[in-house]
Image 1 (cartoon, rainbow, N blue to C red):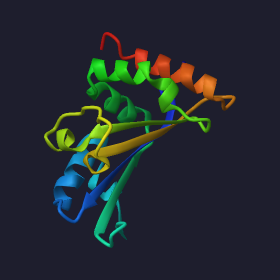
Image 2 (spheres, rainbow, N blue to C red; image 1 turned 45 degrees about the vertical axis):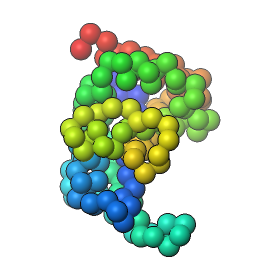
Image 3 (cartoon, helix red, strand yellow; image 1 turned 90 degrees about the horizontal axis):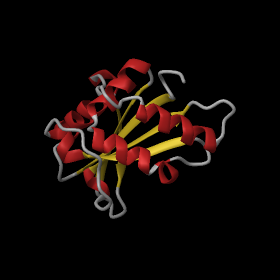
Image 4 (cartoon, rainbow, N blue to C red; image 1 turned 90 degrees about the vertical axis):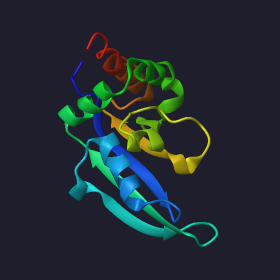
Length: 150
């Protein structure tokens, strides 16, 4: 298996009007290991007209992607591997969430279901040739297992 089973990992955080955008940006950059100049900022309005800022950053090199997964706890990597059926779609995209508050505090922790405002949404495109969900499931399981013992 290739050392990198993902084309990229993209991170997205919503910053509500009640939040400090610098703190949300800091959480996003910690989670992604990304660089400030790579953050895309989009302003939009919420359902009730409230201002929302969407922050996005993607990483696409093998080393930073591997570093991200190394920083996750073994338990969180195991939880992702255990739940791959639900996390990989027919287009071979891999989805999960991180806790935004924990990322701000310098810890990578999978996010729980619930408050959409308090998570960092993460998705990546799985490299599978030929492109298939079954191959993607197998490759991501192998990739996540490759961290055992590190």
